Image (cartoon, rainbow, N blue to C red; front, side):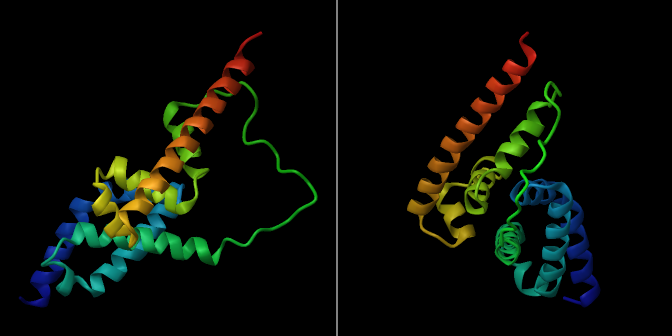
Length: 170
C-alpha cells in the first residue's frame, strides 16, 4: 500500500472517529479542552504507528492510547499545592446546572482509573474483559474499580441533589 493510500485511510479514520473518541477523551480527562489535547496527542502518535495498527482494531488501540496518555499526564501533574486559604466555591448558591454538568463534575471527582472504567464500561459499552484489556489490568480490578466508582457517583450525585434542593427551598 502506498503512503498516499495510507494517509487517505488515516484521514478517513480520523474524520469518522473524532466525535466518538473526543467524547471519550473529554470524559476521561474531565475537561473538554484537556480531552481535545489528549485526543490530538494520541492521534499524532497513532499516525506514526498507522501502518501497523490499521490492520487490527484502530479504535481499540486509540482507546488504549487515550487511557494511557491521561494516566501519564495525571501522574506528572498530581503533586499537591498546599495553601493556607480555602478555595472559593464553584458557583453561587441557587445557580441552576443541567444534569450533564452535574454528571461531568461527579465524574471529575473520581480517581483517574475509576473514571476510565466508568467511561469505558458505560460510554464505550465495553465488556469487563475488554475494559481490563484496555486498562492493562485484571477483570477483578475492573469490577472493584467499577463498584467503588458507582458507589462514589451515587453518593456525590445524591449529595449534589440534596444541596440543590436545600438552596431552592425557602
